[in-house]
Length: 157
Length: 167
Image (cartoon, rainbow over all chains, first blue to last red; front, side, top):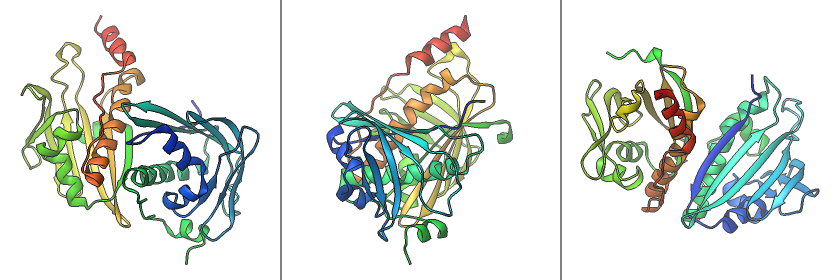
């Protein structure tokens, strides 16, 4: 049995530089990542942080690789107390120019068998990456369609 | 009737689109839309379960043929696929299902490609490369009015696996 791995590919009608900026700069992430401020513009060894819409720290993970605007890898361990206590997983972004557009491949792996967080991220990434694409192509991210638990975690009423 | 229980999902792709379920259903089932985001192919479908389904190349030749298994506008469209353009490989039919669900202010579109044989990953790589391009382009078309430029070739590993199978 291979370990669980989530892979998602999307094509965005913009340059890898713009996709990189959206993935690493919190002023951009806030507009499509459902209000989360994700900062990942440091070098390998520095931190990726994500602050939720209520101002709480949701992630503080190591940046493992950073090669702008081509490849970004960081660790992934949600800090919310109600999340299952699992070892950190790993998120890799690969950005490739494709006919004036960007092919973005997101791989989320390094999960243990039976991981509960794997099920959550498998639902979450398509929503986040669809919103990223909308934001970069139309200037407007998508509205979240969160369940009760996600809304509570994000600190929304 | 086609027994869909013999098909196992092998590739699933989910995308959220800022559009109505009706607009997404229309984009999946009308040739004036598919021509723009589905590699130039025009859909030709009888709008009922049991109806005929075809994807026609720009020169009018049949690329894919099949049978409509589910026609439930604007929530579900499923049909079998026979790869007419690759007769030399004699691949068993697959089943492609589109599910359209309202999700907040957008629509969640789920494409499921299911197979009735132990299909190798190398052959699945065709769909796994193609669907993200096709459905990304569909999303762009509905949200911006402009599809992407995503004409794709079958992956090398897929062609090698098909040729090896035929030997």
